[in-house]
Image (cartoon, rainbow, N blue to C red; front, side, top):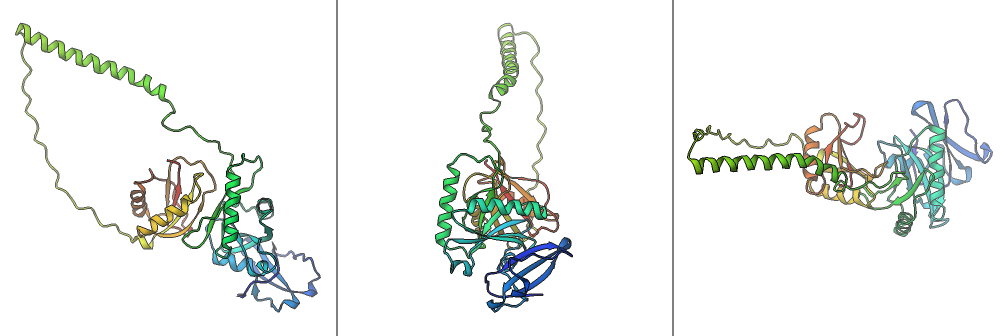
Length: 349
């Protein structure tokens, strides 16, 4: 297994097994390393011979991808030292999947939006990898984080773009030192539940109101008959059936420890930083937050809790912990291979 060292300028390619990588310089001027990937691919990297690197030194993209493993494909936004030395605004965008780097490119803040869209299309066209969200690593400086926040605010105040791809950036810090991002979606805003179907609900209630008024009138008429004429047999007294009071039982102690349950928090709303805020709240309640970020789709109405098989009791407890702020429901199970035991997708309500 290649060893990890500090980052330096390098080239990275992932090709199908049996194919050869193509470098921008003659291979005899480079030090080339490689390792096999799942699904019949091979990762190659190359350094300039004068760099002092050898073929066992993993490139920065692979090191970062192994440090931030996720259960889904993401784009990691990093700021390695060798790029800071060239320009404080230079970033590295890494396609990461299963703890490995499948591609990378450099980007300045000025053309970040275009380069995110380009690498998104590259991942889809080259490897059929669908990117769900992106994250910033802890190597990104505060100055760059602030600039990314400004870009996001500007993007949110602009009309939605017609093209697909990554559009907005969210750099709210996670519990593990990450920031999140989201993919552009074409979902339009939906009417609030309080205003939908108001007239139809009124029409449904009208027959019920009529029945209640008719019943009240019949009772009043019967009382007047018995009071004025003194005729008729009064209704027999009904002996109430004694009610059996159930013996209270103590609530069983949950068969799990919150600190051992790994929770992923995703923001399915348009509110910036919702996932990071909820993640901190759940940490205070004892849950172990695996990661926070943005959901692949926005506009979710109701909060959902997804559970891995065997984590049903933990899911019920999480729904209870969320009840003060969110009306959460438990939905489809997570895959057995998922690193998270539970996943919360925050909705608008």
